[in-house]
Amino acid sequence: MKTVLWTLTLLAALSSPALAREIIIAADPWCPYNCAPGAQREGFAVEAARLIFARAGLGVDYQVLPWARAQAEARAGRIDAIIGASRAEAPDFIFPDEGLGHSDNAFFVRADMPWTYLGPESLRGLRVALITDYDYGEGFAALTAEPPGSPNVVYTQGNDALERNFTMLACGRVDMVVSDEAVGRNLLSTFAARDAVRFAGTQGEGEPVYLAFSPARPGARELAQIFSEGWRALRASGELGAILARYGLEDPEPAKK
Image (cartoon, rainbow, N blue to C red; front, side, top):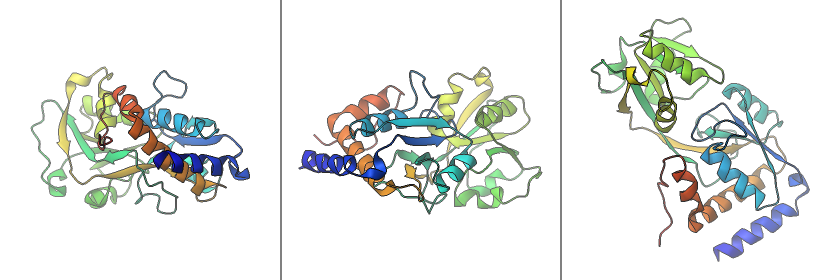
């Protein structure tokens, strides 16, 4: 039955004039979800998307753009989808049934700093590095609402924002960097001053993130359906698990045998 449904989805896609083109997906670097375009490992979300859409006869153009610009381009209908969006930060987008994973705020502090997250109050007095236009959830609402120039929050932007945040942390200019755990750990694995930084746990209030499709791009709902069907097919075949393993990750919902 699953094979039949997947075949019908592909046939519908191939017959849609709106989908007779290359699909453009974009985001700022958020490796291992999406890494450098053209690299041997472009990111598990990019690899999966290429495989899914190739089987529907559709090419994928993966671009790296600052996060705010990627959202704006999608809302304007100039690109098809953004990688790693939550429903809360892009409520007007079209979301597939299947997400890319569950993202939670993870805390990285200086290696010599004894600190444990005990709720938003435990952040008081700390200088925290965040990325402009990222959604850190309701638990960070008070912190992210502070005006630019606040002594408690440093914002960076651009495609190397997280790396610059870790550099500030290692140099003692900030006390903490907040990042998705997988993304933060991935960057630290090649970070020159990684011994000066330690992982200090997660907030425990994460949410799913998705390949979210443009509300202004023709064929967006069909693309979301193709992605959902294709993601489930990759999971059932074991291909998704193999892709994730290349990045040191496991499928949180492996296919039942």
